[in-house]
Length: 444
Image (cartoon, rainbow, N blue to C red; front, side, top):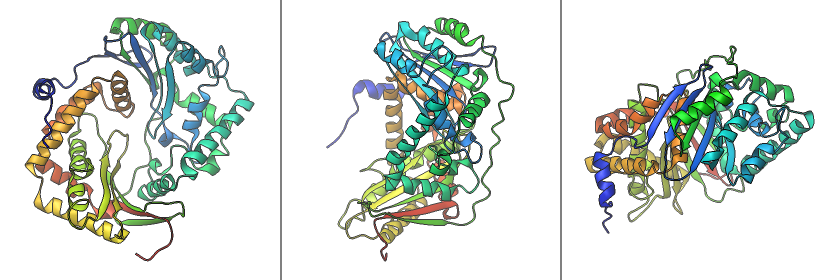
C-alpha cells in the first residue's frame, strides 16, 4: 500500500518557514528571560516557568533534592496555604503540574487567557516566598519515597536503566537518577531543600515561556508587574560540572530479576549534546537514530532483524536527544525473538551496525527520514504546549531562540556523509555500556 501525504502538507514541506508562530524574546532588568509564542486560535494560554537547575546541579550526597523541591513548591508561601496553587488552577478549569530533569525544573499551567495575570502572580510569589513547615517536609519526603517505590523499585526495567546510567557516566552527575538514590532521599532535610531553593530559584536563573492567545506587549506588562520587582541572585554558581574523562574501555552490565517477562539488550554510547550556534553534529545523530532505529517497521534495524525467514528480534529501537548541558547518550535496543539468545541478538545488532557504516546511507531512506522529520515539525507547530516545552527546554540548557528556530532546517541539511561521520565517531564500543536484562541467571 502506498501512503501519500496530503497535498496541503506536501506543499508545506517544501515552502513553510522553520516555525510559523510569532515568537518574541526579551529580558527583564533583573535577568528573567521571557519568550512569547502567539497562537490566537483559542482563548487559552500555557504558562511555564523553567529554572536552570536539575538533578545534575545537586550537591554530592543530596540526590533527589531538586525533585523534592519541585514537590514542596506546591506547599504554600507566606500568603498561600499548602495546596492552594493547584486548587486555584483547578477551580479555574485549568490544569497544572511540574517536572524535574537532569538540567532543569519546570512548572506549568494551562488556563483561559484572561487568567494569565493571576498565574504569573502566583508563580512570582512562589519563586521567592516559599514557606515550609517541618511536618510538610516530612510528609512530602514520604511522597517522593513512595514515588520511587512505584516507579523504580517495583520496575526492573527502571532499575536496569539506573544501573546502566551509573555505569555509563564515571564522573558526570548524569550518573545519578533524577529521583535520587533511596538512601540519600531518606536523609533529605528541610534545610537541604531550602538551600537548593535559595541557591537556584531567582529571576536571573529562570525562563518564563507563555504560549497561546496573548500579545508580547501584554505579557511584558504582566511579567514586569509580577516579576520585575524580584531581586536577582548574586550567588548562582556557574554550571561547571564534573566532566567525563576519556572513556577507553567497553563496559558490560547483566541485570537479573525474576519479574522480567521479556529479556532485552540495551546499549548506550557517550554522545555529544547540542551546543549554541553549533548543532550540526547533534542533528546528524538525530538523523542517525531515526535511520537506524526510529521506526519499528522501516528502520535499518527493523528491516534487518525483525523481518525475513529467520527474524532475530521482535522489536528494535534507537534514540538520541541532545537537549542537555553536558554530553549525553545515544541508545540502541533489541528485544530478541523467541528462541534467540541475548548474545545472538547483540551479535546481530552489531553486524547490522557494521554493515550500515560499511555500505553507507541509502539516499531514499535519508530522504524519507527528512520528510518524516519535516512533517513532524509541521504537526508540532499545531501544539502550543509542545512549542512552549521546546523553547523552554532548549533555553534552560544554554541554547538560544535562534538555535530552536534553526534546528528544523539544520536537520534538513544533514548529509549522508555527516551521518556516517557521526556514526563512526559515536558508535565506538570503547565508550559504550552494553546491558542485558533477563529474568534469571542463564547460560547464553
